Image 1 (spheres, one colour):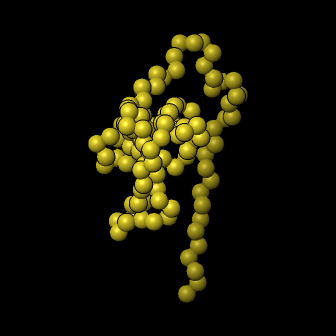
Image 2 (spheres, one colour):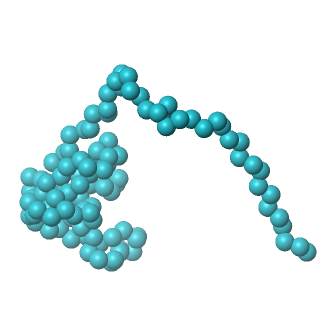
Image 3 (spheres, one colour):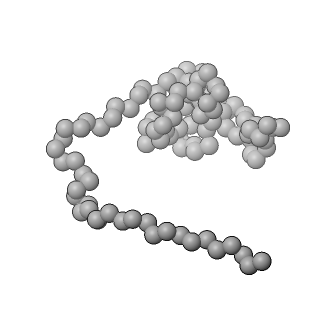
Amino acid sequence: MPPARIILAPIPRTAPTAMTDTLDHTGDSAPAALPPLPDRLSVDPRSPYHLAAACEHDIGIRFNGKERNDVEEYCISEGWIRVPAGKTVDRKGNPLTIRIKGKVEPYYR
């Protein structure tokens, strides 16, 4: 029996628009206001400290003067971040984390 053939239908194309057509120069729409960063924030949706409105935006963490990209959770008032401990995972596939103390400075990128 010969292998089945897949036939792709052509994709309907619209007329190309000029690059300036997509930009709004009228000033009517103001940029969306960023929510204030909370004292404690987690990227895990099961955590009580998960704030979906803040996690939709790109957040940077400066820890002891160095930028960290692997932060799972932070707390400004207690001065700690939670980061994964290497590639180790628990039996459910979640990364094992360690808590490191220091100066925490979150910001929007």
